[in-house]
Image (cartoon, rainbow, N blue to C red; front, side, top):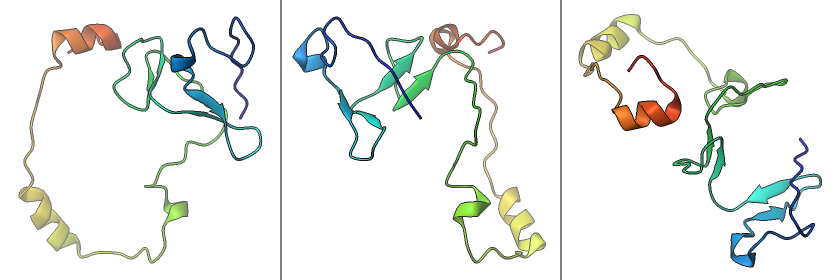
Length: 106
């Protein structure tokens, strides 16, 4: 992956206290120590994208079966019993959150 960022002084940001981006230890990487927001100036997670994201490769997630071993079938009746004990809820998004995230049907 290659990211390009241009500042007024190449390699520097406007204020040294804002210099959260660094070259990574692995070749061709860049690291941000903080949160990154795309189309938002108030990210509340490590990466927040307000808008569509286009992925041309795979999205890896710890739940991916390629990251697991000893996968085995379980007792369906026992799992159904567990599901009936789950707490199910319905909710509406808070208007201020829906507005920032572009959610129309809250």
